[in-house]
Image (cartoon, rainbow over all chains, first blue to last red; front, top):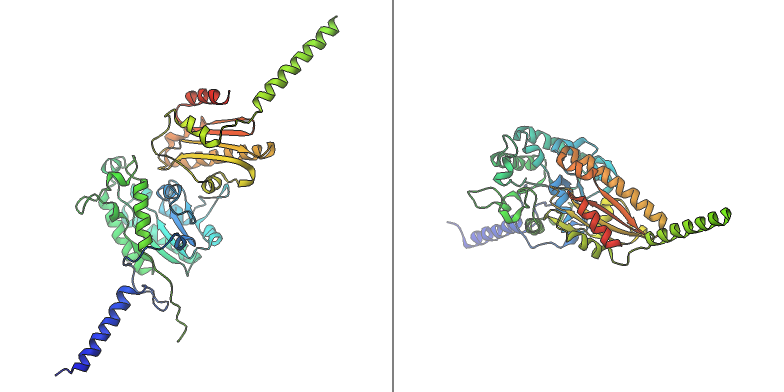
Amino acid sequence: MISFKKIAILALALVFLNNMVLCEPIVLNGTYSGSTIEESEAVSDDYFKDAVFIGDSLTVSIESRNLFPDTEFIAEIGTSILGASKDTIFPYKGGKKKLSELLEIYAPEKIYILIGTNTLCFAMSEDAINHYNALLDTIITARPNSLVYILTVPTLREFTLKKYKGASNKRFIAFNKRLLDLAQERHAYYLDIAALFYTSDKQVQPKKEYVTGDGLHLSMEGAQLLKDYLSKHTVKELLVNDGE
Amino acid sequence: MFKKNAALLFLLAVVIVLSACSGNNTTPSMSCFDSLEKIAQADKFTSEMQDLTQKLANKYLNINDDLYTDIAMRIDTSKVSCDQVIFVTAKDNKSQKDIETALIEYKDNLIASYRDYIPEEVPKLNNFILKNKGLQSVFVVCSDTDTINKLLEDLWN
């Protein structure tokens, strides 16, 4: 027979655990406890002040829209995942620098990665995943203590896919699913932004209003949706284990 | 007699050169943004054009506020084309030279980027417009430079 006292203690313990899992930040006492992030109250622009975005033309176009006015962007049009990890391609003060060099210069606390379109239009997702792993090596080596957010790669409108032989949104979806595993393995945080733009659950091409006329880059409406989502999906702060 | 005529001719030439110079050296009173709007009305650019903030313009052109008194920059934010219009009014002649050097470097970097990304855009970049009137410089990339050149002529004369 379970006593009332035991039930009460059990109930209290459940409430405590529930609060720990659902309401508190994912990183507890400095340890990583999962790659997905629950929605929470939107943070202000201040949150993105010590962040950088890494990416290709998709990221450049987001920068141009000035939705993240105090955030640095390490981005260059036409960049592949592999190129981003090792090549001297990113604009900086009239010249070009490597990603690792710019991470040292900007010293960001938060890193948002949004890259893959240029690779996925040509390569199978397995190659792309290997390249992404190499990119994470570069980032984590340069900034081992920074929060890393992995953003899924938005799908393309059907007419855009036709320009690239063999490219399909299935490839994008498969790649994005693998990014979830990668996030878990590398203690990064996974944000499935691609799903924000789907036409419907069954139709994964982005809604027309979320992309520009090329069916690929985000329109102002799409970029604003992305910003709203990122603002509501954040890791609040690292709670350092001070031994108390 | 010959000496007198030659002196008169020389004087006339000096007057013509000076008046031409003074006309060309008058910085337009219209703001960079209003000038840009006039050019944009030609409808010779993609539909995705958007104004950049001063901070982004500085970053993309690798210049700083000390060089100019006014700036307006509008680009294709989708990056599908390299269409763009930039007006900058420099603080002085030296600053204007620095700005024009920066614009040329910016154009060269764009060519390097687009060569692999969308090669069809490179001829447009090679056919860029870079002109100045007084301390104001304009940089334009679009597919119909003839129309833009005519508009600039009307705008500045």
